Image 1 (cartoon, one colour):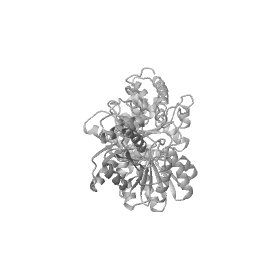
Image 2 (cartoon, rainbow, N blue to C red):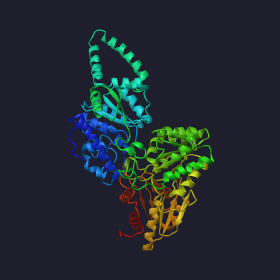
Image 3 (tube, rainbow, N blue to C red):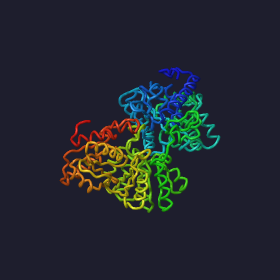
Length: 615
């Protein structure tokens, strides 16, 4: 890729257009080899270039929402060569990360918070008498989250100078009414109109009766505009609305950002874009290229097509359960494909509900459905379920309502990194009274446990399962309690979910030293069936628990506490987990090794518990 200037403010319009094409080519080439969020980044190229022509992100604050549209920004802020390491261990992250660059204003992996963060920065600027500008770049999908409106409402009320750029690719914003609306929108964004508007305000402010005349004309204009243009919602909040404008016209975007920069108050610039712009496979199928693995640039086909995975098995099983019982419903928060619910949505459209990026609402709605006799199943990524913790307690647990949480992406998820690892749900779900948490280790156990959760558990229940394929452990233990997989006398190995594969590998290697382990598989981690564990530890006196979960309130800590309360002593033990810090991005196997959760590291640590030094 040609040299990228450090300062884009001097670029001509034609040079800026050429730069956009170079950036697109670079993005397609890079993501084809690393995987990542392609369609959203392609759709935002002109927006990013226009921002960098008008603002200096090392001083001005650009807050991304979700952040999966930030790749062009990374290239323009000194990380072009580093794009070869995108989402790889030790390389740059797939989301904005201030530790990488001063030009990344804020971590952004989840949705709908950008305006709230930006208004906080704007207020800090005012209090500190700073001179920088603050922008929030938010997609229309993120506007389905209620927090976005909380931020917009406060921003409008504050009067703080702030620019919100709404990147609308047609998912959520209502279309304006016909050709008249489009014509008026174009007219009100012309430079001569904007100059006239600015001058008119200035003149009216000094003329006798100018204030009265301005108020009358403003009311007439507002009435017409509210009838024909989709902006009254924002202006009712006290936000100046500009748009809609073609998001792939870098010249007009630059002009509008310069104008918005001069306005003394909150501004929303409504930009219409095409997700996947410039790469026809992504334009035709933006969902598939939202988050994509390595692919062939010429054909758009994945180099390693995905086979069956936990999400797809969940979706298939949901269809079977819905055929058996008309009360079974599926809910998702803008993750229909990701959670495997495409087939369910086609077969049972009247019982499928995509509520947008609104996990708190999804949980509360599920509670309402359950209260009235339905059997709602909310499929949600583990890291996104964190956003609904209050509703889990207040709306579900207090009344012990039967809501099923299908917690996808539990454990280490890989390349998406810190913002997406599902290492907290096992800890926080355990704090909720009456909650049952099931942990399948393979596809068949997922099928069995989902059926059990939907038809037999009386109160709230969660089933947590990982991203991707199953491991070598294929048996269906046929139980929702603790299960003794292998009998020994020297050490008690305990795990759940996919970690059982590493523990089996560890046990096989321990035999080489004459060490025979009890292996206990926890099919349910809340509440825990303590009896087989207590019996085993009484025999072995050694406890070794491995889990891809945060240390605080991990299963191992809970077991040690429960055993101590029973007066059962553990002479030697080890708890292996993801620790007390955030885990970076990389492949799952690399991250397991980093955390000491791979078979080789578990073997070494188990040897030490058994009194052997490092081998």
